[in-house]
Structure formats: C-alpha cells, structure tokens
Image (cartoon, rainbow, N blue to C red):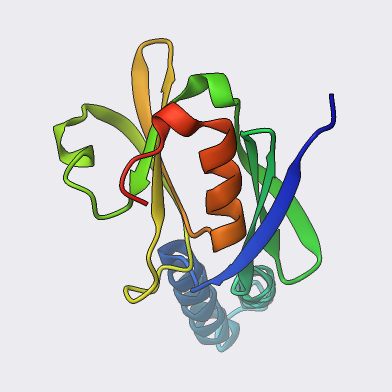
Length: 163
C-alpha cells in the first residue's frame, strides 16, 4: 500500500513566555548594572540577562509544521528557522473527530488539555482535532490548508464534521 503524505506550515506570533523571558532578561541586565556600581558580582547578572535575551529572541520566530501521513499527524515547532522540535504526534486511530475550531461541537466535550499550534491570528480559520487517549480527551488546534483538509477527509471520512 502506498503512503499518502501532506505537509504544511504556518508562522506563529510569539508566545507569551517569549515576552516573559525578554522581560526577565531586561530586569536582570538592569539589576546587574545597578549591582555593578557597588560590586563586581553584578557582571554575572548582566551576562545572564544578555543570555536570556539572546535565547528568547531565537524563540520569537516560531513556525508550526504539520506532516500528515495516512491520517496520522506530526506537529513540529521550528524556532528561528533552525531548531526543530516535535510538539505533538497522534495516530488516526486516536482521533475522535475533526471540526472547525469555532464549532459548537467542542463546547460539549470534557477537554483535559488544549494544544494551540496555529498562527494565533484571529482572522485565520483553524481546525480542531479531538483526540482520545486513555479515555481523556485532548483538543489540538491546527491551521490547515485545503490540501491537508482534503487528505484528512479521505482518511478519516466518518470523523470529519463542518469543514
């Protein structure tokens, strides 16, 4: 049997922990400079602050890549166009259903965990995938193009609603 494969990626806005990290870096630099006026140990805080800012600036540009093979999904985050980390994987067999992200169908579900792998732009439509593991339901939000949606409809016919 031939595998069917679809790939798509979206660029996301910075996550809230990006701003927290930058803020901590700035506070650390300022505190280090203040302590440096009285003691040389302020250099340590100053260097830590610069390191925090450098690390978090690399995390500002996040791109989510969706790889869908025969209905199985792998979602990876690509940070700074260089570092890749697999964020979520699930099999087609664990998918309870797929619907529009703003569907009323989701409201009736007892969701244990929510994952948002979208561009976080309000004007972009997203797709909600409800997966069930160990009788616990998780909500995965993705921003798929038409080709990905058609692929999901092909392999998960009876689980796709309102797309």
